[in-house]
Image (spheres, helix red, strand yellow):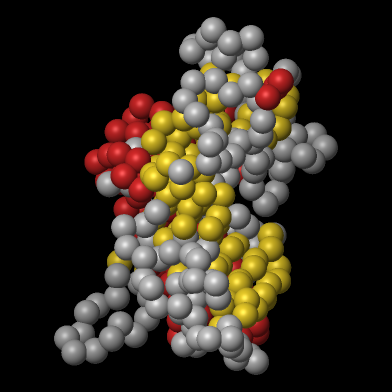
Length: 362
């Protein structure tokens, strides 16, 4: 049985009569992006404007680009303050807020740890000679991160004027910023704002699987999307709660999913997922297959899905309740977890109360 998630309010303002769905897209951040716009026509320069927005995010926030603002910060000498563009400073500030609220389960300053596990721009796990860090190396990484303190200095406020520039970030030495768990979501929001600035109200934006929708399609329906499902368990088994497809009316909402099946490597018969717990300086082992967060802002959905994944089903669900987040946790069960009782591995689903409140079974 299919289940559907509905926002609290749906506007009945439909696209103009005779509207069609216009598709735009391209490549950015090592992935693809797609924009669907419902309207009679789209501005001729819209494709270029959208690509320019994404190029700007990469130029400021990519840790894969050595000459990005983030790259320059990561190479800065100890004890230095570096200016950051307004957007980069705002995204980093938000990331640090989530880091604080999650008790360090998400940490944008943990780039050195991520790199050590082969998920950074160099020394990758799929390159010859890579070896997972030893227990001694993990201890070193934890000690180094504990000794580092990132400081942010916002620009001075001038009454009656708009903020002219970004703030500054202090490099204590060795901090490697990694905004990959928030920048993609921010880029979705940025494309949405660009579309709105062009007078467009009905659209669906997607960057690398993260989505945000607004308005309606030409037929008056909202933008329906299916929540991402983990791969089918061996033998097709689905244990515990129902795992039927969930369709979301993406109307004034965003959705992001963090899953351990996307990127991982095997070594010595052990599976290491790309989601790293900064507190232990090692990949998570909490049996969560995925966490999906629905939120008005894709940047928030992106960051929180990562933080909740690291926290695990119990602590993550508790934090989602405290923060009022609509979250879906999919937990591996069966012989590879302590749920037991199944001949093949399956999945068990948990929904936060905010997510359950959106649920409308058909």
